[in-house]
Length: 475
Image 1 (spheres, helix red, strand yellow):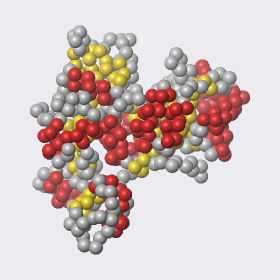
Image 2 (spheres, helix red, strand yellow):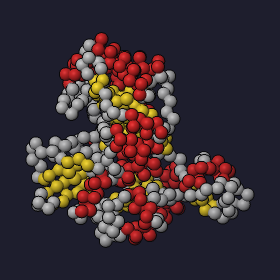
Image 3 (tube, one colour):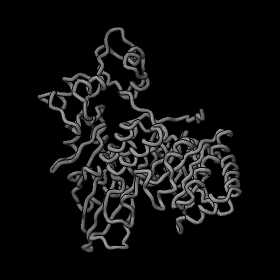
Image 4 (tube, one colour):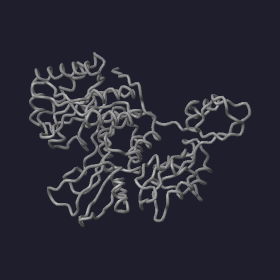
């Protein structure tokens, strides 16, 4: 799959013709609010068999060609490279697809074997239905191997809405996490309706993961976390209630998201994690945590100090990095998940825990700030799809911050009020997927379902194979 950035004067039919793709196929993937009105700077996911590759330090055209299974000449031709020795890190290349011309006597299983793929993958890639009917001379596009990752998605939607979201994207999820059961000072859990969404998750073979938190809509939960974490008896009661709930509801694992924890409760929190593992593992349940986006072990504050990355990485089965909310509702306009800041968090995490325990947090919503920003003002939150609709309505040119790898635009509404919108698009999604590949991370965790973002799901599927049928390994 490719990403095309719209230039002045381009129409959808011209773009489709350039890539030899059907207009409707582009519309289907991107769900454009007005296919006849493209915006300067708008990114489009293009459903083609080729892929994009950003040159890394030390790479040359020969190593890149070998890694993708194509010829040097095919890459040079596709990218109009006249001097293969002049390649620079950071430049993005189009890698053409692998094409196999069927020879006399060949059958599909032999071809699949040769390229290390499956018959079904070739059938799907070429939109074929019968593996026994292939003809000599037919050109087959060979699907490339993709990294296998795990994907989690949280949701705080109402039960029926969450079930609808899972039915739409659950085939791309390893885990599904309704957010969240609120802990109480006596170690009990505040219930909410989750039956429909859990049924939907199971129908999509997405493992239900029980999320617990000390956060509520009215409180950061600092005192609540202290009351539970500092009391051994209440900790045990909470774990007993968690186990009972998991058995009743069919949850298969636990995700612990305690935020704004007092610094002096850091060791209490670590002890609770170990207790959770000691009680849940013997019964076949896994334990994960969600941690604030720290960039060093010395980073202090109510959000950070009590989140001990080394301990979480050592004790828990996996850890979700909450790499978002730099552009929070009350902030001045800025990228919500700037890739440069996310990278700092990932690199610190990798210094104290293995890559195969790390999930990169990925927020999938947009924010609209009134400008000039006034202290105390809060931004409106909505989906990336709504951001594109709003940009289309006001015919706003979309800009792209190369440092943050995030798109944004400005517009003036009917009342003369200025606005600045930061959102996610195909480019920003691909930047995050590239980082997962670069660091060989375990997976991606979405916050949160309920914000339509069709480009993301198409690109996720194009970049990765998604682990299903997850079975915990406590060895």
